Length: 186
Image (cartoon, rainbow, N blue to C red; front, side):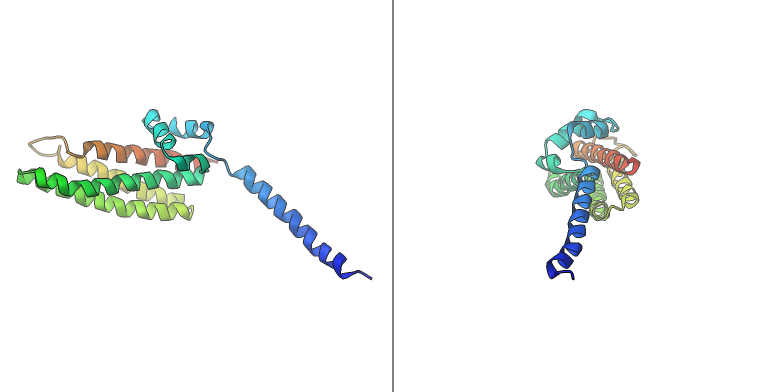
């Protein structure tokens, strides 16, 4: 006759073995952001140095896997877009030309729309819905380009007072695309 302890061990031992196998398989699948991974991602971008400095400049990179790098790139871009939105009212105060005011207000609308898209991209990335992320990030890049186009489509052609920010946003979208490509191709 089986004792209660032996019956319990029949149930517990397989659970423990299964648990260890599951943990080992997850450890194999999860790849942390080591130099080789960052290098492979950043080589896919238009600006390798910007990509590497973006990831190296954020302490969250060291503990991120591929999925975490996608979230991180979106989070960094969200912070950039939000900072730009916060900066625009001060820029508006310095402008006197009605056309310049109109243009920067259109940029504010573009960046506000981009912020909504970035938040949606973050949620989609959290859910590992990477095809959706691509759509949202494409919209973000388009909004940054639209803002710059405000200053180039009709005279007087000028440089946007937030052109550095729009360039940074497009470079950050490029990083997100590269990370997503790495996730999808593995």
